[in-house]
Amino acid sequence: MDERTGTQRVAAIHDFRRLRRQATMESLLARLTGGSADLLAFEDVRQKLRATAVSDRQLREIPLDAIVGSVGRYQDFTRSFLPRQDSDEGRWARVMMASNDLAGLPPIEVYQIGDAYFVLDGNHRVSVARKNGVTRIQAYVTPFRTRVPVGPGMRPDDLIIAAEYASFLEATRLDESRPGVDLRTTAPGQYQLLREHIYVHGYYMELGQNRHVGFEEAAADWHDAVYLPAVELIRQRGLLRDFPGRTETDLYLWLAEHRAELEQQLGWEISAEAAAEDLSSRAEPRLRQPADESQLEMALSTERDPPPAAAPWRRDLERRGDAWLFDEILVPISGEAAGWEALAQAISIAHAERSRLYGLHVVRSAEQREGAAVQSLRAEFDRRCAEAGVSGRLAVEVGSVSSAIRDRSRWVDLVVLQISYPPGPGPLDRLKSGLHTLIRTSIRPVLTVPRAIPTISHLLLAYDGSPKATEALTLTAYLAGRWKRGLTVLTVAETAMAAETMRIGARAYLERHGVNAAFVTGRGPVGPAIIAAAEDTASDLIVIGGYALGTVGGLMLGSAVEEVLRTRRMPTLICQ
Image 1 (cartoon, one colour):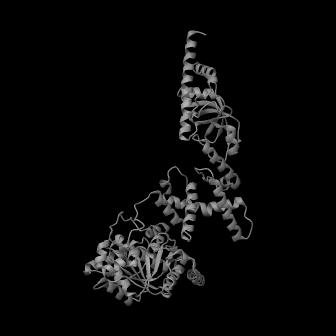
Image 2 (tube, rainbow, N blue to C red):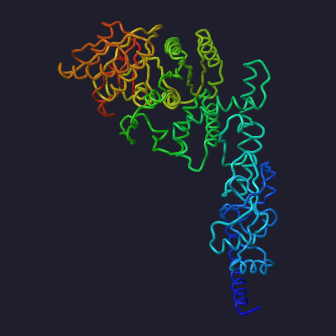
Image 3 (cartoon, rainbow, N blue to C red):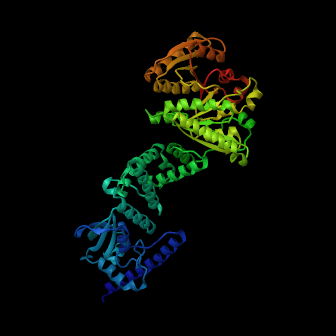
Protein backbone atom coordinates (compact mmCIF):
# COMPACT_ATOMS: atom_id res chain seq x y z
CA MET A 1 0.00 0.00 0.00
CA ASP A 2 1.56 3.32 -1.07
CA GLU A 3 1.58 6.38 1.10
CA ARG A 4 -1.26 8.08 -0.80
CA THR A 5 -3.50 5.05 -0.48
CA GLY A 6 -2.70 4.74 3.21
CA THR A 7 -3.60 8.37 3.80
CA GLN A 8 -6.91 7.93 1.97
CA ARG A 9 -7.71 4.85 4.03
CA VAL A 10 -7.01 6.62 7.32
CA ALA A 11 -9.23 9.52 6.25
CA ALA A 12 -12.01 7.16 5.16
CA ILE A 13 -11.92 5.27 8.46
CA HIS A 14 -11.99 8.59 10.32
CA ASP A 15 -15.10 9.59 8.33
CA PHE A 16 -16.76 6.24 9.04
CA ARG A 17 -16.21 6.51 12.80
CA ARG A 18 -17.54 10.05 12.86
CA LEU A 19 -20.64 8.92 10.99
CA ARG A 20 -21.04 6.01 13.42
CA ARG A 21 -21.20 8.49 16.30
CA GLN A 22 -23.76 10.54 14.37
CA ALA A 23 -25.82 7.39 13.77
CA THR A 24 -25.90 6.70 17.51
CA MET A 25 -27.04 10.26 18.22
CA GLU A 26 -29.67 10.12 15.46
CA SER A 27 -31.15 6.92 16.86
CA LEU A 28 -31.14 8.31 20.42
CA LEU A 29 -32.82 11.52 19.36
CA ALA A 30 -35.47 9.58 17.48
CA ARG A 31 -36.31 7.54 20.59
CA LEU A 32 -36.51 10.67 22.74
CA THR A 33 -38.85 12.41 20.30
CA GLY A 34 -41.01 9.39 19.57
CA GLY A 35 -39.84 9.21 15.97
CA SER A 36 -37.92 6.60 14.03
CA ALA A 37 -34.46 6.62 12.51
CA ASP A 38 -34.92 3.25 10.83
CA LEU A 39 -34.91 2.43 7.16
CA LEU A 40 -38.04 0.74 5.87
CA ALA A 41 -37.86 -2.94 5.00
CA PHE A 42 -38.82 -3.39 1.36
CA GLU A 43 -40.54 -6.73 1.74
CA ASP A 44 -42.62 -5.44 4.62
CA VAL A 45 -43.69 -2.43 2.57
CA ARG A 46 -44.36 -4.52 -0.54
CA GLN A 47 -46.60 -6.94 1.31
CA LYS A 48 -48.53 -4.29 3.21
CA LEU A 49 -49.07 -2.15 0.13
CA ARG A 50 -49.73 -5.15 -2.10
CA ALA A 51 -47.15 -3.87 -4.56
CA THR A 52 -46.32 -5.83 -7.70
CA ALA A 53 -43.53 -5.42 -10.26
CA VAL A 54 -44.77 -3.82 -13.47
CA SER A 55 -41.76 -3.66 -15.84
CA ASP A 56 -38.09 -4.50 -16.33
CA ARG A 57 -35.42 -2.40 -14.68
CA GLN A 58 -34.35 0.91 -16.19
CA LEU A 59 -31.11 2.86 -15.76
CA ARG A 60 -31.67 6.44 -14.61
CA GLU A 61 -30.66 9.03 -12.02
CA ILE A 62 -32.69 9.11 -8.84
CA PRO A 63 -32.65 11.55 -5.89
CA LEU A 64 -30.78 10.26 -2.88
CA ASP A 65 -33.34 11.77 -0.50
CA ALA A 66 -36.02 9.55 -2.05
CA ILE A 67 -34.27 6.37 -0.89
CA VAL A 68 -36.18 5.34 2.23
CA GLY A 69 -35.39 1.68 2.72
CA SER A 70 -33.42 -1.40 1.85
CA VAL A 71 -34.13 -4.93 0.72
CA GLY A 72 -31.74 -6.74 3.03
CA ARG A 73 -29.72 -4.24 5.06
CA TYR A 74 -32.42 -1.98 6.54
CA GLN A 75 -31.00 -2.56 10.04
CA ASP A 76 -27.42 -1.66 9.10
CA PHE A 77 -28.04 2.02 8.33
CA THR A 78 -30.17 4.84 9.73
CA ARG A 79 -32.84 6.59 7.73
CA SER A 80 -30.20 9.05 6.47
CA PHE A 81 -27.87 6.09 5.67
CA LEU A 82 -25.45 6.62 8.54
CA PRO A 83 -23.66 3.30 9.31
CA ARG A 84 -24.79 1.43 12.42
CA GLN A 85 -22.44 -1.59 12.42
CA ASP A 86 -18.78 -1.30 13.47
CA SER A 87 -18.07 -4.36 11.33
CA ASP A 88 -18.81 -2.32 8.21
CA GLU A 89 -15.79 -0.09 8.76
CA GLY A 90 -13.47 -1.79 6.25
CA ARG A 91 -16.02 -2.15 3.47
CA TRP A 92 -17.33 1.40 3.92
CA ALA A 93 -13.78 2.76 3.78
CA ARG A 94 -13.04 0.85 0.55
CA VAL A 95 -16.17 2.25 -1.09
CA MET A 96 -15.20 5.74 0.02
CA MET A 97 -11.74 5.32 -1.48
CA ALA A 98 -13.18 3.91 -4.72
CA SER A 99 -15.54 6.89 -5.02
CA ASN A 100 -12.47 9.12 -5.41
CA ASP A 101 -11.04 7.09 -8.29
CA LEU A 102 -11.49 8.23 -11.87
CA ALA A 103 -13.47 5.07 -12.65
CA GLY A 104 -15.96 5.89 -9.91
CA LEU A 105 -18.60 3.45 -8.67
CA PRO A 106 -21.09 1.33 -10.64
CA PRO A 107 -24.83 2.17 -10.49
CA ILE A 108 -26.76 0.89 -7.51
CA GLU A 109 -29.86 -1.30 -7.88
CA VAL A 110 -33.19 -0.24 -6.35
CA TYR A 111 -36.84 -1.13 -6.26
CA GLN A 112 -39.33 1.73 -6.69
CA ILE A 113 -42.75 1.98 -5.03
CA GLY A 114 -44.48 5.23 -5.81
CA ASP A 115 -41.90 7.98 -5.40
CA ALA A 116 -39.84 6.04 -2.86
CA TYR A 117 -36.83 3.78 -3.50
CA PHE A 118 -35.44 0.73 -1.70
CA VAL A 119 -31.81 -0.39 -2.14
CA LEU A 120 -31.33 -3.89 -3.49
CA ASP A 121 -27.57 -3.54 -4.01
CA GLY A 122 -25.40 -0.55 -3.10
CA ASN A 123 -26.25 0.45 0.47
CA HIS A 124 -22.64 1.48 1.19
CA ARG A 125 -22.50 3.46 -2.06
CA VAL A 126 -25.61 5.38 -0.98
CA SER A 127 -24.07 6.07 2.45
CA VAL A 128 -20.83 7.34 0.91
CA ALA A 129 -22.65 9.44 -1.67
CA ARG A 130 -24.70 11.15 1.02
CA LYS A 131 -21.57 11.80 3.08
CA ASN A 132 -19.98 13.42 0.00
CA GLY A 133 -22.93 15.75 -0.47
CA VAL A 134 -24.17 14.10 -3.66
CA THR A 135 -27.90 14.69 -4.35
CA ARG A 136 -28.50 12.23 -7.20
CA ILE A 137 -27.11 8.80 -8.06
CA GLN A 138 -27.17 6.42 -11.02
CA ALA A 139 -29.39 3.40 -10.40
CA TYR A 140 -30.98 0.42 -12.08
CA VAL A 141 -34.64 0.86 -11.14
CA THR A 142 -37.30 -1.87 -11.03
CA PRO A 143 -40.74 -0.23 -10.61
CA PHE A 144 -43.49 -1.76 -8.45
CA ARG A 145 -47.14 -0.74 -8.67
CA THR A 146 -49.40 -0.02 -5.72
CA ARG A 147 -52.84 1.54 -5.34
CA VAL A 148 -51.74 4.15 -2.80
CA PRO A 149 -49.39 7.13 -3.15
CA VAL A 150 -45.99 6.55 -1.57
CA GLY A 151 -43.53 9.39 -1.05
CA PRO A 152 -39.96 9.72 0.20
CA GLY A 153 -41.19 11.14 3.50
CA MET A 154 -42.82 7.85 4.49
CA ARG A 155 -42.24 6.75 8.09
CA PRO A 156 -43.19 3.51 9.86
CA ASP A 157 -46.52 5.00 11.02
CA ASP A 158 -47.16 6.19 7.48
CA LEU A 159 -46.60 2.64 6.29
CA ILE A 160 -49.37 1.37 8.57
CA ILE A 161 -51.76 3.98 7.20
CA ALA A 162 -50.73 3.29 3.60
CA ALA A 163 -51.25 -0.44 4.15
CA GLU A 164 -54.75 0.21 5.46
CA TYR A 165 -55.42 2.48 2.50
CA ALA A 166 -54.23 -0.18 0.04
CA SER A 167 -56.52 -2.75 1.64
CA PHE A 168 -59.44 -0.29 1.54
CA LEU A 169 -58.92 0.47 -2.14
CA GLU A 170 -58.61 -3.21 -2.96
CA ALA A 171 -61.98 -3.83 -1.29
CA THR A 172 -63.79 -0.82 -2.76
CA ARG A 173 -62.04 -0.41 -6.14
CA LEU A 174 -62.66 3.32 -5.78
CA ASP A 175 -59.36 4.12 -7.47
CA GLU A 176 -60.75 2.33 -10.53
CA SER A 177 -64.39 3.45 -10.44
CA ARG A 178 -63.46 7.01 -9.43
CA PRO A 179 -60.04 7.72 -11.01
CA GLY A 180 -58.05 10.35 -9.17
CA VAL A 181 -59.87 9.79 -5.89
CA ASP A 182 -57.85 10.96 -2.87
CA LEU A 183 -58.90 9.36 0.41
CA ARG A 184 -55.66 9.70 2.33
CA THR A 185 -55.77 10.02 6.12
CA THR A 186 -53.15 10.92 8.70
CA ALA A 187 -54.01 8.45 11.47
CA PRO A 188 -54.22 4.65 11.66
CA GLY A 189 -57.63 3.03 11.99
CA GLN A 190 -59.55 5.53 9.87
CA TYR A 191 -60.21 3.20 6.95
CA GLN A 192 -62.15 0.80 9.14
CA LEU A 193 -64.45 3.72 9.96
CA LEU A 194 -64.86 4.47 6.25
CA ARG A 195 -65.77 0.82 5.67
CA GLU A 196 -68.46 1.11 8.36
CA HIS A 197 -69.86 4.23 6.67
CA ILE A 198 -70.06 2.33 3.38
CA TYR A 199 -71.70 -0.71 5.00
CA VAL A 200 -74.39 1.53 6.52
CA HIS A 201 -74.87 3.36 3.21
CA GLY A 202 -75.19 0.05 1.39
CA TYR A 203 -77.76 -1.16 3.91
CA TYR A 204 -80.00 1.84 3.24
CA MET A 205 -79.48 1.42 -0.51
CA GLU A 206 -80.77 -2.15 -0.24
CA LEU A 207 -83.81 -0.99 1.76
CA GLY A 208 -84.60 1.72 -0.75
CA GLN A 209 -84.04 -0.39 -3.86
CA ASN A 210 -85.23 -3.73 -2.48
CA ARG A 211 -82.24 -5.64 -3.90
CA HIS A 212 -78.77 -6.77 -2.94
CA VAL A 213 -76.08 -4.08 -3.24
CA GLY A 214 -72.45 -5.19 -3.41
CA PHE A 215 -69.75 -3.48 -1.40
CA GLU A 216 -68.05 -1.96 -4.46
CA GLU A 217 -71.34 -0.51 -5.72
CA ALA A 218 -72.16 0.84 -2.26
CA ALA A 219 -68.69 2.40 -2.05
CA ALA A 220 -69.09 4.21 -5.36
CA ASP A 221 -72.52 5.55 -4.42
CA TRP A 222 -71.32 6.54 -0.95
CA HIS A 223 -68.42 8.44 -2.53
CA ASP A 224 -70.74 10.41 -4.81
CA ALA A 225 -73.76 10.92 -2.55
CA VAL A 226 -72.19 11.25 0.90
CA TYR A 227 -68.45 11.83 0.82
CA LEU A 228 -68.18 14.40 -1.99
CA PRO A 229 -70.96 16.71 -0.65
CA ALA A 230 -69.29 16.66 2.78
CA VAL A 231 -65.90 17.46 1.26
CA GLU A 232 -67.42 20.32 -0.73
CA LEU A 233 -68.79 21.70 2.54
CA ILE A 234 -65.36 21.34 4.15
CA ARG A 235 -63.86 23.31 1.27
CA GLN A 236 -66.53 26.01 1.43
CA ARG A 237 -65.96 26.46 5.15
CA GLY A 238 -62.17 26.47 4.74
CA LEU A 239 -61.82 23.87 7.50
CA LEU A 240 -58.45 22.65 6.28
CA ARG A 241 -57.02 26.03 7.25
CA ASP A 242 -58.22 25.41 10.81
CA PHE A 243 -56.63 21.93 10.93
CA PRO A 244 -53.20 22.20 9.27
CA GLY A 245 -51.53 18.94 8.36
CA ARG A 246 -54.83 17.07 8.06
CA THR A 247 -56.60 15.79 4.97
CA GLU A 248 -60.12 16.17 3.65
CA THR A 249 -60.84 12.55 4.57
CA ASP A 250 -59.67 13.22 8.14
CA LEU A 251 -62.11 16.11 8.36
CA TYR A 252 -64.92 14.11 6.75
CA LEU A 253 -64.62 11.53 9.53
CA TRP A 254 -64.27 14.15 12.27
CA LEU A 255 -67.28 16.00 10.92
CA ALA A 256 -69.36 12.81 10.89
CA GLU A 257 -68.30 11.95 14.44
CA HIS A 258 -68.89 15.51 15.67
CA ARG A 259 -72.32 15.55 14.05
CA ALA A 260 -73.25 12.27 15.73
CA GLU A 261 -72.11 13.58 19.13
CA LEU A 262 -74.16 16.76 18.70
CA GLU A 263 -77.25 14.78 17.70
CA GLN A 264 -76.91 12.56 20.76
CA GLN A 265 -76.42 15.60 22.99
CA LEU A 266 -79.31 17.63 21.56
CA GLY A 267 -81.73 14.84 20.71
CA TRP A 268 -82.15 16.28 17.20
CA GLU A 269 -80.85 15.66 13.75
CA ILE A 270 -78.08 18.18 13.02
CA SER A 271 -77.27 19.30 9.50
CA ALA A 272 -73.78 18.81 8.17
CA GLU A 273 -73.56 22.59 7.68
CA ALA A 274 -74.30 23.27 11.35
CA ALA A 275 -71.82 20.63 12.50
CA ALA A 276 -69.14 22.08 10.20
CA GLU A 277 -69.74 25.57 11.54
CA ASP A 278 -69.41 24.33 15.11
CA LEU A 279 -66.28 22.32 14.30
CA SER A 280 -64.71 25.43 12.79
CA SER A 281 -65.61 27.54 15.82
CA ARG A 282 -64.00 24.98 18.13
CA ALA A 283 -60.81 25.09 16.09
CA GLU A 284 -60.48 28.81 16.77
CA PRO A 285 -62.00 29.47 20.22
CA ARG A 286 -63.57 32.88 20.49
CA LEU A 287 -64.31 34.90 23.58
CA ARG A 288 -67.75 33.88 24.71
CA GLN A 289 -70.28 35.06 27.25
CA PRO A 290 -69.99 33.06 30.52
CA ALA A 291 -72.72 30.45 30.73
CA ASP A 292 -73.87 31.54 34.20
CA GLU A 293 -74.05 35.28 33.53
CA SER A 294 -77.28 36.82 34.75
CA GLN A 295 -79.81 38.43 32.45
CA LEU A 296 -79.10 41.84 33.98
CA GLU A 297 -75.36 41.55 33.25
CA MET A 298 -76.13 40.35 29.73
CA ALA A 299 -78.50 43.22 29.11
CA LEU A 300 -76.13 45.93 30.33
CA SER A 301 -72.90 44.53 28.89
CA THR A 302 -71.49 45.89 25.66
CA GLU A 303 -70.52 43.76 22.69
CA ARG A 304 -67.23 41.98 23.39
CA ASP A 305 -66.57 40.86 19.84
CA PRO A 306 -67.00 42.90 16.66
CA PRO A 307 -70.22 42.02 14.84
CA PRO A 308 -69.85 39.63 11.93
CA ALA A 309 -69.81 40.99 8.41
CA ALA A 310 -73.05 39.14 7.71
CA ALA A 311 -75.47 37.23 9.89
CA PRO A 312 -75.14 33.43 9.70
CA TRP A 313 -78.50 33.07 7.94
CA ARG A 314 -77.43 35.62 5.34
CA ARG A 315 -74.19 33.74 4.67
CA ASP A 316 -76.29 30.60 4.24
CA LEU A 317 -78.58 32.40 1.78
CA GLU A 318 -75.65 33.68 -0.27
CA ARG A 319 -73.92 30.28 -0.28
CA ARG A 320 -76.98 28.14 -1.02
CA GLY A 321 -78.22 30.17 -3.97
CA ASP A 322 -81.54 28.63 -5.05
CA ALA A 323 -81.77 26.26 -2.08
CA TRP A 324 -84.35 26.69 0.68
CA LEU A 325 -83.24 28.90 3.55
CA PHE A 326 -85.12 27.51 6.55
CA ASP A 327 -84.09 23.84 6.60
CA GLU A 328 -84.51 23.51 10.38
CA ILE A 329 -87.03 25.39 12.52
CA LEU A 330 -86.94 25.52 16.33
CA VAL A 331 -90.34 25.68 18.08
CA PRO A 332 -90.39 25.89 21.89
CA ILE A 333 -93.47 24.02 23.18
CA SER A 334 -94.85 25.13 26.54
CA GLY A 335 -97.57 22.49 26.78
CA GLU A 336 -100.28 25.11 27.30
CA ALA A 337 -103.14 25.40 24.83
CA ALA A 338 -101.94 28.75 23.49
CA GLY A 339 -98.45 27.33 23.02
CA TRP A 340 -99.55 25.19 20.10
CA GLU A 341 -100.13 28.31 17.99
CA ALA A 342 -96.38 28.58 17.36
CA LEU A 343 -96.26 24.97 16.19
CA ALA A 344 -99.18 25.54 13.83
CA GLN A 345 -97.39 28.55 12.34
CA ALA A 346 -94.13 26.63 12.09
CA ILE A 347 -95.92 23.82 10.27
CA SER A 348 -97.25 26.35 7.75
CA ILE A 349 -93.70 27.60 7.10
CA ALA A 350 -92.35 24.05 7.00
CA HIS A 351 -94.70 23.30 4.10
CA ALA A 352 -93.47 26.37 2.22
CA GLU A 353 -89.77 25.71 2.98
CA ARG A 354 -89.60 21.90 3.06
CA SER A 355 -88.34 22.26 6.63
CA ARG A 356 -87.74 19.92 9.54
CA LEU A 357 -89.33 20.96 12.84
CA TYR A 358 -87.46 20.66 16.11
CA GLY A 359 -89.64 21.11 19.15
CA LEU A 360 -88.16 22.03 22.53
CA HIS A 361 -89.81 21.59 25.90
CA VAL A 362 -87.97 22.75 29.01
CA VAL A 363 -88.64 21.37 32.50
CA ARG A 364 -87.17 22.15 35.90
CA SER A 365 -86.01 18.67 36.93
CA ALA A 366 -84.93 15.33 35.57
CA GLU A 367 -87.95 13.74 37.27
CA GLN A 368 -90.30 15.97 35.29
CA ARG A 369 -88.53 15.04 32.05
CA GLU A 370 -89.47 11.39 32.56
CA GLY A 371 -92.99 12.11 33.79
CA ALA A 372 -96.34 11.32 32.22
CA ALA A 373 -97.04 14.97 31.32
CA VAL A 374 -93.95 15.14 29.14
CA GLN A 375 -94.79 11.83 27.47
CA SER A 376 -98.25 13.13 26.68
CA LEU A 377 -96.83 16.36 25.27
CA ARG A 378 -94.39 14.40 23.11
CA ALA A 379 -97.20 12.25 21.75
CA GLU A 380 -99.26 15.34 20.91
CA PHE A 381 -96.30 16.98 19.16
CA ASP A 382 -95.67 13.84 17.09
CA ARG A 383 -99.37 13.56 16.24
CA ARG A 384 -99.65 17.13 14.98
CA CYS A 385 -96.51 16.84 12.87
CA ALA A 386 -97.63 13.51 11.40
CA GLU A 387 -101.10 14.83 10.54
CA ALA A 388 -99.50 17.85 8.83
CA GLY A 389 -97.08 15.64 6.89
CA VAL A 390 -93.92 17.33 8.18
CA SER A 391 -90.82 15.89 9.82
CA GLY A 392 -90.76 16.78 13.51
CA ARG A 393 -88.77 15.79 16.56
CA LEU A 394 -89.16 16.96 20.16
CA ALA A 395 -86.30 17.36 22.63
CA VAL A 396 -86.84 17.79 26.36
CA GLU A 397 -84.25 19.68 28.38
CA VAL A 398 -83.79 20.52 32.04
CA GLY A 399 -82.93 24.13 32.86
CA SER A 400 -83.82 27.70 31.98
CA VAL A 401 -86.27 28.25 29.11
CA SER A 402 -84.54 31.31 27.67
CA SER A 403 -81.07 29.77 28.00
CA ALA A 404 -82.15 26.52 26.36
CA ILE A 405 -83.76 28.34 23.42
CA ARG A 406 -80.75 30.64 23.02
CA ASP A 407 -78.26 27.75 23.09
CA ARG A 408 -80.19 25.63 20.62
CA SER A 409 -81.04 28.44 18.21
CA ARG A 410 -77.55 28.26 16.75
CA TRP A 411 -78.34 24.82 15.32
CA VAL A 412 -81.40 25.90 13.34
CA ASP A 413 -82.32 28.46 10.69
CA LEU A 414 -85.42 30.01 12.27
CA VAL A 415 -86.87 30.29 15.79
CA VAL A 416 -90.67 30.41 16.13
CA LEU A 417 -91.92 31.67 19.49
CA GLN A 418 -95.45 31.80 20.85
CA ILE A 419 -95.89 35.28 22.33
CA SER A 420 -98.30 35.36 25.24
CA TYR A 421 -96.56 37.97 27.36
CA PRO A 422 -94.67 40.51 25.22
CA PRO A 423 -92.22 42.95 26.87
CA GLY A 424 -93.83 45.69 28.91
CA PRO A 425 -93.30 49.37 28.11
CA GLY A 426 -90.83 50.17 30.90
CA PRO A 427 -87.05 49.48 31.15
CA LEU A 428 -87.50 47.12 34.10
CA ASP A 429 -90.13 45.19 32.17
CA ARG A 430 -87.65 44.70 29.33
CA LEU A 431 -84.90 43.66 31.75
CA LYS A 432 -87.17 40.92 33.09
CA SER A 433 -88.36 39.82 29.69
CA GLY A 434 -86.88 36.57 28.44
CA LEU A 435 -88.33 37.39 25.03
CA HIS A 436 -86.35 40.65 24.92
CA THR A 437 -83.14 38.77 25.72
CA LEU A 438 -83.83 36.03 23.18
CA ILE A 439 -84.51 38.47 20.36
CA ARG A 440 -81.49 40.62 21.18
CA THR A 441 -79.04 37.72 21.43
CA SER A 442 -80.35 35.44 18.67
CA ILE A 443 -78.14 34.98 15.61
CA ARG A 444 -81.13 33.59 13.69
CA PRO A 445 -84.37 35.27 12.62
CA VAL A 446 -87.10 35.06 15.27
CA LEU A 447 -90.78 34.72 14.34
CA THR A 448 -93.16 35.71 17.14
CA VAL A 449 -96.66 34.26 16.91
CA PRO A 450 -99.61 35.61 18.94
CA ARG A 451 -101.95 33.49 16.79
CA ALA A 452 -101.22 31.27 13.83
CA ILE A 453 -102.02 32.41 10.30
CA PRO A 454 -102.64 29.24 8.26
CA THR A 455 -101.76 30.85 4.93
CA ILE A 456 -99.49 33.89 4.73
CA SER A 457 -100.38 35.78 1.55
CA HIS A 458 -98.95 39.27 2.02
CA LEU A 459 -95.81 40.62 3.71
CA LEU A 460 -95.16 44.05 5.18
CA LEU A 461 -91.53 45.16 5.50
CA ALA A 462 -90.74 48.05 7.85
CA TYR A 463 -87.69 49.71 6.29
CA ASP A 464 -85.67 52.70 7.49
CA GLY A 465 -82.36 52.14 5.69
CA SER A 466 -80.49 51.06 8.85
CA PRO A 467 -78.15 48.02 8.84
CA LYS A 468 -80.76 45.93 10.69
CA ALA A 469 -83.47 46.99 8.24
CA THR A 470 -81.18 46.10 5.35
CA GLU A 471 -80.86 42.59 6.80
CA ALA A 472 -84.67 42.45 6.95
CA LEU A 473 -84.86 43.66 3.32
CA THR A 474 -82.62 40.79 2.23
CA LEU A 475 -84.74 38.23 4.05
CA THR A 476 -88.01 39.72 2.79
CA ALA A 477 -86.79 39.63 -0.81
CA TYR A 478 -86.12 35.92 -0.38
CA LEU A 479 -89.52 35.21 1.19
CA ALA A 480 -91.57 37.24 -1.28
CA GLY A 481 -89.68 35.84 -4.25
CA ARG A 482 -89.48 32.21 -3.17
CA TRP A 483 -92.95 31.97 -1.66
CA LYS A 484 -94.56 34.09 -4.44
CA ARG A 485 -96.23 36.40 -1.91
CA GLY A 486 -97.36 40.01 -2.17
CA LEU A 487 -95.14 42.65 -0.55
CA THR A 488 -95.55 46.16 0.76
CA VAL A 489 -92.60 48.23 1.95
CA LEU A 490 -93.28 50.82 4.62
CA THR A 491 -90.92 53.74 5.22
CA VAL A 492 -91.30 56.05 8.21
CA ALA A 493 -89.07 59.13 8.13
CA GLU A 494 -89.03 62.64 9.51
CA THR A 495 -88.92 64.22 6.03
CA ALA A 496 -90.31 63.32 2.63
CA MET A 497 -86.80 63.47 1.16
CA ALA A 498 -85.49 60.94 3.67
CA ALA A 499 -88.40 58.61 2.95
CA GLU A 500 -87.82 58.86 -0.80
CA THR A 501 -84.14 58.06 -0.37
CA MET A 502 -85.08 54.91 1.55
CA ARG A 503 -87.60 53.87 -1.09
CA ILE A 504 -85.08 54.30 -3.93
CA GLY A 505 -82.58 51.99 -2.26
CA ALA A 506 -85.15 49.34 -1.33
CA ARG A 507 -86.82 49.39 -4.75
CA ALA A 508 -83.48 48.99 -6.55
CA TYR A 509 -82.56 45.97 -4.41
CA LEU A 510 -85.91 44.27 -4.89
CA GLU A 511 -85.91 44.85 -8.65
CA ARG A 512 -82.45 43.29 -8.92
CA HIS A 513 -83.89 40.19 -7.29
CA GLY A 514 -87.05 40.13 -9.42
CA VAL A 515 -89.43 41.05 -6.59
CA ASN A 516 -92.36 43.45 -7.12
CA ALA A 517 -93.49 45.56 -4.18
CA ALA A 518 -95.83 48.42 -3.32
CA PHE A 519 -94.41 51.32 -1.28
CA VAL A 520 -96.19 53.36 1.39
CA THR A 521 -95.02 56.12 3.72
CA GLY A 522 -95.98 56.18 7.37
CA ARG A 523 -96.50 59.12 9.71
CA GLY A 524 -95.97 59.58 13.43
CA PRO A 525 -94.40 57.06 15.86
CA VAL A 526 -92.88 54.06 14.12
CA GLY A 527 -94.66 51.27 16.03
CA PRO A 528 -98.24 52.46 15.46
CA ALA A 529 -97.38 53.33 11.86
CA ILE A 530 -96.30 49.72 11.24
CA ILE A 531 -99.50 48.31 12.72
CA ALA A 532 -101.66 50.74 10.75
CA ALA A 533 -99.88 49.88 7.49
CA ALA A 534 -100.24 46.15 8.14
CA GLU A 535 -103.99 46.53 8.63
CA ASP A 536 -104.43 48.84 5.64
CA THR A 537 -102.58 46.45 3.30
CA ALA A 538 -104.16 43.26 4.72
CA SER A 539 -100.70 41.92 5.54
CA ASP A 540 -100.35 38.58 7.32
CA LEU A 541 -96.71 38.88 8.34
CA ILE A 542 -94.61 41.83 9.47
CA VAL A 543 -90.88 41.72 8.79
CA ILE A 544 -88.73 44.12 10.77
CA GLY A 545 -85.08 44.59 11.69
CA GLY A 546 -83.95 43.91 15.25
CA TYR A 547 -82.73 46.26 17.94
CA ALA A 548 -80.90 49.05 16.17
CA LEU A 549 -79.80 50.92 19.29
CA GLY A 550 -77.04 49.84 21.66
CA THR A 551 -78.10 47.72 24.59
CA VAL A 552 -78.53 50.44 27.18
CA GLY A 553 -80.19 52.78 24.68
CA GLY A 554 -82.57 50.06 23.64
CA LEU A 555 -83.54 49.46 27.25
CA MET A 556 -84.12 53.12 28.10
CA LEU A 557 -85.76 54.34 24.90
CA GLY A 558 -87.69 51.26 23.88
CA SER A 559 -87.95 50.12 20.28
CA ALA A 560 -90.37 49.79 17.41
CA VAL A 561 -89.92 46.04 17.69
CA GLU A 562 -91.43 45.93 21.15
CA GLU A 563 -94.21 48.35 20.27
CA VAL A 564 -95.29 45.97 17.48
CA LEU A 565 -95.00 42.91 19.73
CA ARG A 566 -97.14 44.47 22.45
CA THR A 567 -100.10 44.78 20.08
CA ARG A 568 -100.10 41.00 19.47
CA ARG A 569 -101.87 41.58 16.14
CA MET A 570 -100.06 39.19 13.78
CA PRO A 571 -96.90 37.12 13.34
CA THR A 572 -93.78 39.29 13.29
CA LEU A 573 -90.45 38.15 11.83
CA ILE A 574 -87.55 39.90 13.53
CA CYS A 575 -84.29 39.83 11.65
CA GLN A 576 -81.25 40.26 13.92
